[in-house]
Length: 465
Image: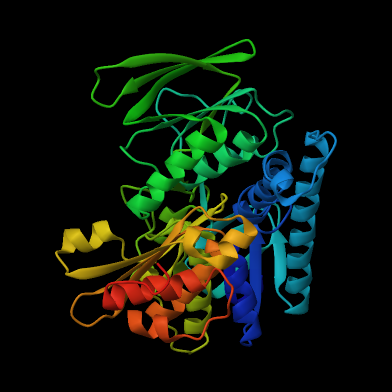
């Protein structure tokens, strides 16, 4: 039996970060992964391949719709979907290869196979050895959620995993779910010419994000890609008939039913924790009603030396949240005193223009009855945005009405995914809206919109509007 200080089950962004950090801090570490490659959903069939296709599809769309205004004319523009897929696959391979290198560099022992608990300190690898771990970290992630009565055949009724590797660009694509995954998939295929229909159960897109930002995204999908969007609707049934999927969609209130046809139906209704095969019952652990493993604020399960992180515990199902969980646990095991605050974890939608938010939304503050101030600044008023022809979007700063302390930052616009880091830092260090305004930001940049919105939140009006 091999003995380690730390045994990590699952090599996604939570597991591999936990393994690397624990090894970096002097612990002997084993990492167990059921699939042939490391990286979990994010690196293999999630974050990385989707961002590769988002970037490629945006370049294609830019050539078709915007370069002429810059004085650049091209004779003909064709899509090579095979090459776009090949580039995506190469990006995935390079990223996974880099992870393999890091494991060797930090002397993390990697085992491939399904890991199952044999006792509170022992994990048996199917077809392999039994590992003893003084500490064990469960980081098995999540799988796409499904809809009752809508079987996923992975051919015509698919999840995001299959959507990223389709053999063709759909002429008609029905997307069920208006969350981050659904919106990003809509952007990829909308840019490439698919006729889009999007069905969302709620009365808005992107639940949990800023409502104004979500409405801006809805308008973008309609105006840029001609998407048909049915809010407050649910997919009741989908049947494959040859090369067509016939779907029955009904309003949530039950007063309207539609029959829609598409080449593919993409079910993007969220994700569910994945703990199958761990045999948690052997060590006396169980999941809650939503399939999550209960943990305390230190991410310890009912057995203190067994931790759970990422998508298998409560909190936002985000790759970077899982990584923060992994860092937190690894440093705790090493005797450090890390800090974890999910309010500081940003949410990002990698469409274009990007959408990002961190901290409280207005809806949350209103629900709490907390007095707040709002400062907004449109991208169209930025010199850098006009020069780059990126005038769509805005920055919104939320601050406490009495203290001016920063409560939230929400951005729709170019480079929002990177700019949101200013909000994360501001929230982490207790900055006020005025503090953000006082930052000497470079001119001309997109970041100046944050400075302006912060002034508007602090004093009631921006400077350049």
